[in-house]
Amino acid sequence: MADFTIGYTQQFYQSLAELVSWWEEELLFTEAEISRFVTLIYESLQKVGHFPQMYPEVSEVYGFTQPTHRIVIGKALALFYRVDEARQVIVVGRIFQTKQLKLQF
Image 1 (spheres, helix red, strand yellow):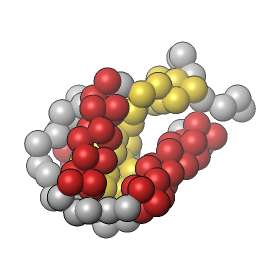
Image 2: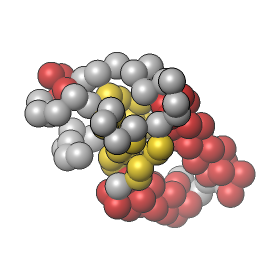
Image 3: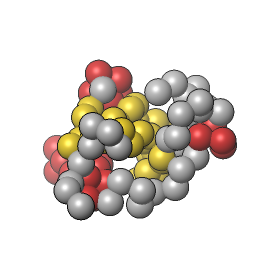
C-alpha cells in the first residue's frame, strides 16, 4: 500500500499560526517549547500518511457529513482530517484547542 499525500488546508495553516501566536504572546512559551509542539503535530500527521485509518472516525460525534478522523495531541489540542481514498490524499483541517466547541472543517 502506497503512502498517502498530506494536503493541508488554508484553515490548518491559519489555525497553526494563531496557536503559535497565542503560545508566544499569552503563554510566553520559548521557541524550543513551540518547536516541540509543532513537531508533535507534524509527526502525528506523517503517521497518518502511512496509516490513514489509525485515528478514530468521529463524524457522528461532531455532526460532520463526511467521514472525519480526529487526532488528539496531548490534552489540549485536536485536529481533524479526512481521507480521500481515490486521490490518495489526507486533507487536514483546523487545529482546535480541545475546549473549543466551534467546529468547522
